[in-house]
Length: 409
Image (cartoon, rainbow, N blue to C red; front, side, top):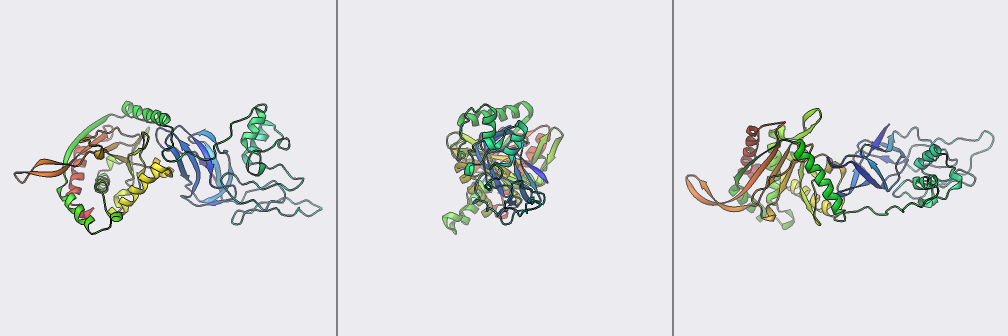
């Protein structure tokens, strides 16, 4: 048995608002299943559970803002779930509930649970039974000495929820009704996001000793190979140069692990795989950087599909917590904005930010002759606590070497 905690969805996150439960007490969950929606400065994020088991109790009511690390629910085997109300029959597939039986008369007739939906599912109490209330509300009522029988509930089916207990404890002062829908996609608080970005970037420049390197890459081979590849495929199956940039970067990070990982109070921790973040501009002025997980092992079509999916979900809503908190390094590309070179700021706790500028045709020296070639500037911002410019230069050269043989990516 363990507690499911409010996750950290980035170094800039101190707290989040639980806006929706997608499971209820008694539900069985599998590792990786989305169980809740949490709202942060960057919008609504689907949060997964990282172990399999049964939801034994939901501690936090929807529309509650809590700090990172706060227990949200208890996940267990389900064998010890006890429902104190008489006559409650568990949902199919849920753990069996222990129902106390009177010594001299049979128990009341079973009452089925209502259809399951977002938020805690609460069975109606039989006549003469206890008041309908969520587990968290019962616990809070015991702590504050509030009699449940005297309250009218505002939850599903008239159930008593945490806000009803808090309202009663505050002397009956009305509390604002919770939002029924979380913010999604571009519907984010721009000022709140800018404050979060400002806090993270200020921390990065204050705590991380950056060094910067940049070089120009000849993309003649990559452009010709890409044109040949796309010529034989329908539009929906074609690749963009961005996929080649991401794959070459991921492979280079796998070869130079000192640039792939996280730095914390205990020092640098190299990552076991490359979860490559991609900075995405949101309509309205926001910025978010979800990760393509295990990017170094994906083939180019799969990587292209992941990139398109991340961009679409970042802009309409639906990113997962594991995609926001797992990046081991990040790529930012401003080529479509006409920028030749971008010098990024490292996103803590990462130790590297790689930037790609615009693909332009430029005069380059090729085999003792001058040629007009497609080229791009690539930059590296790296953490000097972990490595030096020598390794950074080798890393940029490795990206170049990978792009000279695009057929092998």
